[in-house]
Image 1: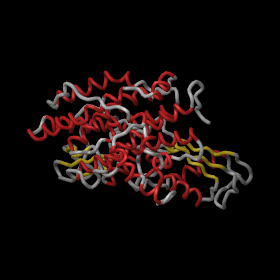
Image 2: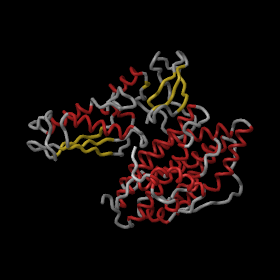
Image 3: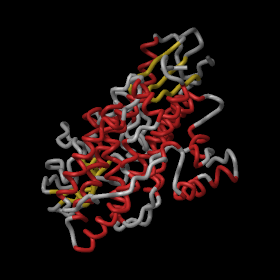
Image 4: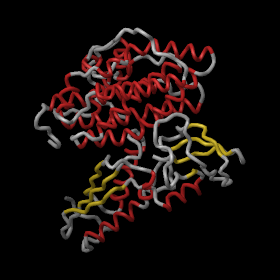
Length: 181
Length: 258
């Protein structure tokens, strides 16, 4: 336990502190898709405030990775830690949880809108392809630029683990699709 | 120590975790050798993505093995400071990349094995192994789809691509039997409810391989040698070569960090 810094009102209830932490987490962005916060991505599974005394607060953030090998994991954890430190939290623990496994269903509606505005086709609300059978394609991925559904899969694997490569047959724009997972 | 099993020794569980980790690390490392050398940009990116997934899975298993074994072990000491004879990966994963046919076939043979393995492992009574398997299964599903498509595309392609896929099958098939020959730590962990008896997934594996080979119009060699031993530390020279490169930095500059 370490003394809370200047920005934390330790007279607030644990629920209030938790709200404050969540607000901070809304400002921590995914380094690979820098329009999405960790909250938009749905990778923050829980926040626990512990041992609240007059001057001491411990905060534990439970984070789940999108993909096991995502190189952003360590960076995201560091950014969470730095954002909380900046707001005066000093006793910060980040715990990885693997189960239940992250799914694109946990990306918020707002997050999906942000993705589209950024030029990345958001994942479908309902996953249609989730078996290993060959040559399957998601149905109708919408081009984020011209909104056409006349698009084609270029590769299931894109610039990051979470994306697939598509191309629009109408406007010809190549684009990323945040693939269902 | 969390999740400590009551009826099997920690050593058996550690060995099982190392086996799962080594499989993923060595195959991941092999795939990473393609980075910057893929046949086309999109496929270079694909194989590198798959390499990352494999290494991510390896990290999770190594972290758990390190936590169980204590003595200052970390994921890095387990990956970078063990000798070839300590590695428990199946021989298939260390086989060289060869051409694109051999690489994609190796991925297909192994990812299909992992797919059925993780399906069962996610029901392990060990919550950590179950969680890693549940997470990894989603990634492996993509790997099976991608690699099976290449086996079909090349097998049912031109005369040359078909010949190359058939050559790849001849080269790799002898290493597939080992996947289903349980090592002692697989048998003990399986009977304790933590691990999976690999023999139990052989039929499902075979069915999937056969279906894809049929679509690819390629065939399994009638009689093939059987090569085993990797899971118990008896490796081909290929693993020694991989480790020499992979471990070079940590062995030359111990504890070096980026």
